[in-house]
Image (tube, rainbow, N blue to C red; front, side, top):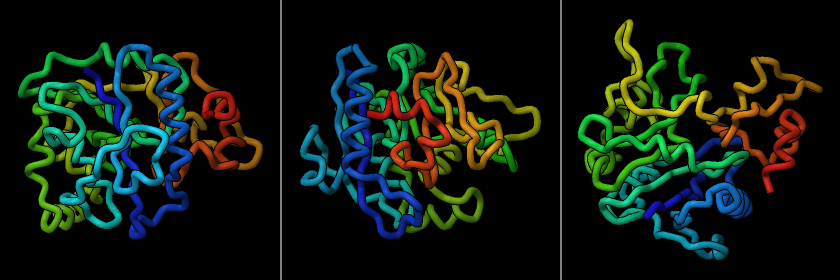
Length: 252
């Protein structure tokens, strides 16, 4: 069984220009339903099921919560946190636009073993300032039980301070450290299974080719399957639709 999961939680400590809303979760749910034909279960992990009454929810475990960071998402790697041991989970952030068939991305699921237990997104935006090996946590594919250490080894009282000194914090920094991909040695190349733009996984900022400003618009690549808007942006913002007019066709 494939479980496609998103997270929704309210955290006043997160200093974002835009806060994810239940409507964003609803649109994400509909986009995935349209673009994933293989059998699957869609679920939202949340502490506010009263706001997410349009789809199945799973209780949010706050044991790894660090105010201001996304460490609650580590729950997906906990046995029975989203699914049972041995089942597959595709974890996606809600702030994305699904534009094509997602099934081919799942076919890249590796032979799960101790060295390569999961698939990750290699975001080119993280290839600057010495961060070339950073995992982008917006999309993850794994079999429950193969990555349990990401949940069990994280200490919300001690680990964040250490991460902030080295990497800037967050669950993706923790994952990068645990996979030994953060701040790689010269000549190091990605040796963990991952998606890139070649597979149709994009970040919205990359589509602007570094050009921002009034009247500047991006074009959707022909091979695009999903475009993420990580950070302080959401596909529902008018300024994002103005910069990426193709959003209006797909984000519904």
